[in-house]
Amino acid sequence: MGSKADKPISRREMMFIPFNVQEYFNTARILDKKGQARPLVTSEEKVVITGKTAADFQTGGISPMQSALLLFVIVTAATIYGIRKGKTLWGIDLILFFAAGVAGCILAFLALFSQHPAVSPNYLLFVFHPFHLLCLPCMLNRVRKKKTSRYMIADLVVLTLFICFWAIIPQRIDLAVLPLALCLLIRSASNLILTYKRPS
Image (cartoon, rainbow, N blue to C red; front, top):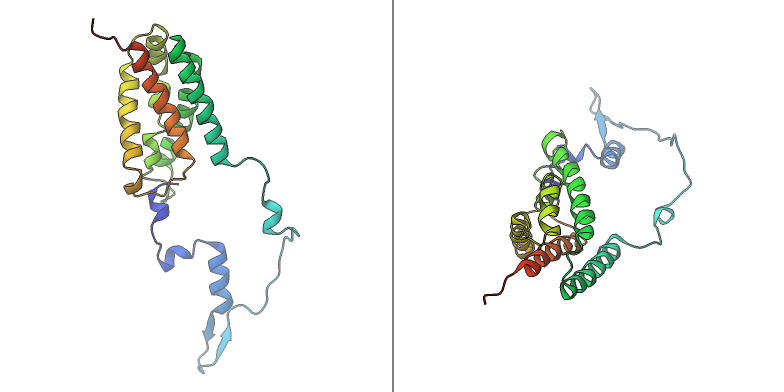
């Protein structure tokens, strides 16, 4: 969801939430010509009864935050290994930036073309955006040849600013996004480290 989803909504906008409509309908009263009040809803009937409670929908598996942290640890360890051995490990870049690009395409489509008022603007597009896919071939070509990638430099700057200004971004972003952003940042930084030429 975009930043508008975090803003307070009006009473009219609350009517788009089925549970709120049900609550207001149950308490609504109609006044007749004689001034006598009668309830708008006299009875309720559940059409579909699942027999399940909220506890039945809770999963006991790994959480998104745990998954993101696990990925962050793996990427960090692999990057440190690659830097020490002088290897680019471009396969990791392919997987990470491809996945981030696909996610970015979905977010961009929702932000640009969806009629839903709560999906735009979405500041997650600073992390996940279609440019990851568009620039992926050129970026990987530079990485494989152990040359500095300008795209990775730009990505490093954008991600650094995104993380630094995390607290003041006018959108409630799940904390699990932070390890994912750090994964992309670390891979971009590794390219600069491996291609850095010390002055002789």
